[in-house]
Structure formats: C-alpha cells, structure tokens
Length: 83
Image 1 (tube, helix red, strand yellow):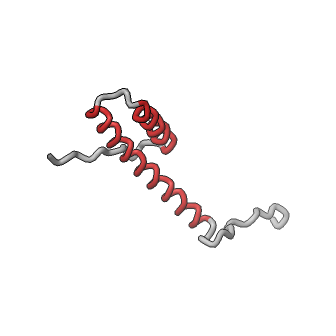
Image 2: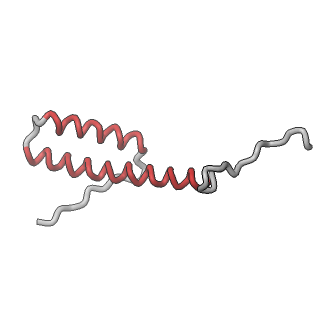
Image 3: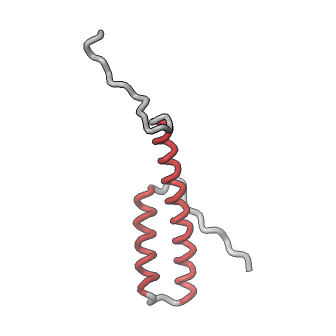
C-alpha cells in the first residue's frame, strides 16, 4: 500500500517545526500510543526533520554568500567622515 508523503507548509517557521519535532520525540519515547498513531507521528517527525535540515542548509548558504564563502566579511564599515 503506497504511503502519501507528509508535507510541511513552506510558510512554517524553523522554530515552530523544531518545537513540534521535539514534542513528537517526547511522545514517541513515552510509548503510550497505539502503533498506528506512533507510525503517523514518526512520519510527521521525519518530514519535520527534513524541513529543519533544509532550512538550516538554506541559512548556511546565505551566510556563505554574505561572507564570500571564505569566512571573510564582504561588508565594509560605513564611513561618516568622508562625506
């Protein structure tokens, strides 16, 4: 039986996704849910983990662009004396 993919809305904030993932992990670790419910939660958790990984990768790419990838800042201080 094919499973439908769990999708995370693009408008979801990283912090919200991470918080939900932490809640799911705690719930699964407690082991109080039926198997079907746990499997659904696990699928949601995997989708949230992937979303968080992609969000972090995008943020890392932005930092690399801003620092020219070499760790050196490309931005220069604003000179107010040279007007």
